[in-house]
Amino acid sequence: MDKKIPSLNDLSISIHLINKKYKIKEFIEEYRSRVSEINETLRQGLVTVDGLSNPVQKVMQISQELTDVELDQTVQVVESLSSKYDYASYLEECEQIRRIFLTEREEYFAVKATKSQAKIVDEVTTLFELSGSSELMFSKWLDIVLQKLSPKTLEIEYEDLDGKRKKLTARHRLFSVADEFVEAPLIDRYHGINAYDAFLLHSFFDVKQNKWVYIPVRLIMSIKAEDDEEISSIEDEKEK
Image (tube, rainbow, N blue to C red; front, top):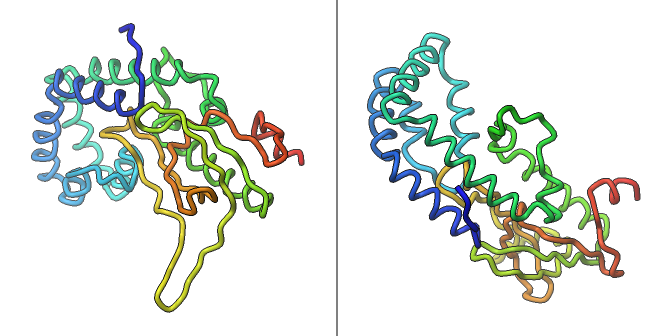
């Protein structure tokens, strides 16, 4: 597979086409039907991806509610259906298209900062990578940096969902609560239809637009402090 992926939206389109190729909708429907006989909570938890949680995190959370017997039965169902739908090839194509997308953006500040340090066996994306944990930590780190810099700002250049390069002047913003008004950061969301195109959308307060703006944090290209000093890595800021 050798292709350019212009934007995160295009990545999702590619994932959708791969899903269609391997009949993943049918796979999921059959999977839900069979696991509902094992554990109803598992079936209900996998009905939809609502954008509020990473799909891998959701599966991991639900699996913790299963007994050892139920977990073994679930694994047996997965193994049976994986063979029927050639699920291994499906995962390989999804992983490859995601890797192409990130490789094209490997010089982005956030891609470097959130890159898993774990050894990748046969270039298969690690669970840590897909869980979105690194993106969550990175977004929280940025919030802390903004709080320390306040009232100074950070200029954040990033690639938006449509592939356009944009800039945002971010400043730490306190929650504001009044009798008829509440202002707070937007709730974190995940863009995507499965784990391979799931990217965290975290909000920052843009002083120029005077509002909270969602940014796909993994696609932050550069960060520059108000004094025009570019932050080259997380370690730079830790040492200050």
